[in-house]
Figure 1: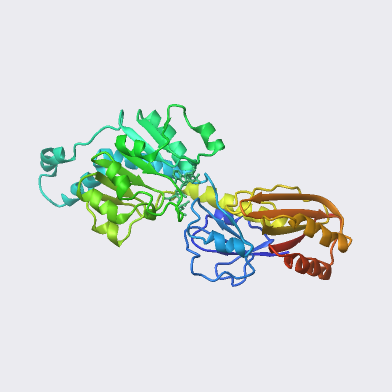
Figure 2: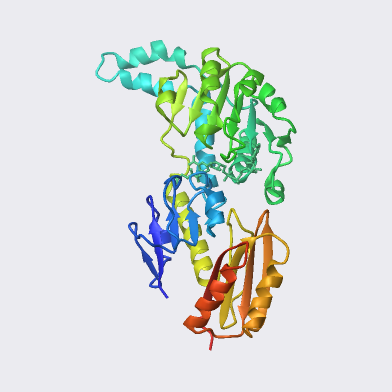
Length: 396
Ligand SMILES: NC(=O)c1ccc[n+]([C@@H]2O[C@H](COP(=O)([O-])OP(=O)(O)OC[C@H]3O[C@@H](n4cnc5c(N)ncnc54)[C@H](O)[C@@H]3O)[C@@H](O)[C@H]2O)c1
Ligand SMILES: O=C(O)CC[C@@H](O)C(=O)O
């Protein structure tokens, strides 16, 4: 069986090369089984009904309308942690570059090109760029996930005091965070005491405009604010006021736009946080592996809308059913199978919020018409949004 993958953006070859002869990868495919992308926005784009899965080679999934795609039976994957080191290294370098006024100093130095007495001018004017050391300064980290946690740990080794805020920190990440990172339980506490703040939370309806007028008002005067998460997390009107009154001494962002260009004391970077060869490869490999695994076995790892499921495929065939997390779904599904005299060899049902996913391994090798018939019946159960049959090609 050939799986069709549509790609958007530049996906690293290390990932694409995993999609072997069983795959056709084509950026122009009109009816793909799956989509592999980076930052391309799928909002306001029609989704072909053939699409069963989307893999985001990256962390943020705000370029994908996850809720409405879930209603259409699409599994959405991301690649948690695959680019965290790349972002961390750029955040730490910006922290130091900002403290030492490196961005404006370099711009000024370049303006001397072609003038006489460059060395004298340098010595006479360098006092305009005297900076600070970050040792002993306080860094606030908002969002202690894959990126925030490593930024926090490594800032400690640069002798900074580190304070962090994340009311939803995961147990896995909590294990990795140094106990010298001081956790605070309300954001104001962090805002009021830090010299530098870096934000690492996902953009969602809940976090849009997260750093608003109230947040800026709570900050210490002259703060340096670093945003490698998403531009929309910061209310730009409030940012403009905070830059004008000196609350924010410098705003470093990976998300330039026309308004940002108009503001003073802003350093804009062209969305380079994850742009290293290593990170692009990590993301592409992880995304392609997850897609392959899902298309070939129905198993799920790192979806943002469904739970992880890993059931080895050993029986002649497997049915995968994505459905609402409501009572009696498994009962209805197994009754249907019993009516067709299909024997269940193994089964897993897991839920995540209002959605659930059921894998059923059957002892029967289905003919094509049998498969079409059972899938139609399964899809007619109220609450089922997608059913698939996977024939196990290796089964003797
Ligand atoms: N600039 C880039 O190239 C680049 C690269 C990678 C990620 N990102 C952005 O950074 C974000 C974070 O990435 P990550 O890999 O660390 O994600 P992650 O999911 O591992 O971590 C996000 C953390 O934010 C926390 N969080 C959620 N809501 C919060 C809130 N209201 N207050 C405080 N904490 C909150 C979560 O509990 C979680 O611990 C991504 O969603 C993406 O938008 C940007
Ligand atoms: O693909 C990229 O270059 C950026 C990815 C980044 O925004 C992410 O959310 O992981």
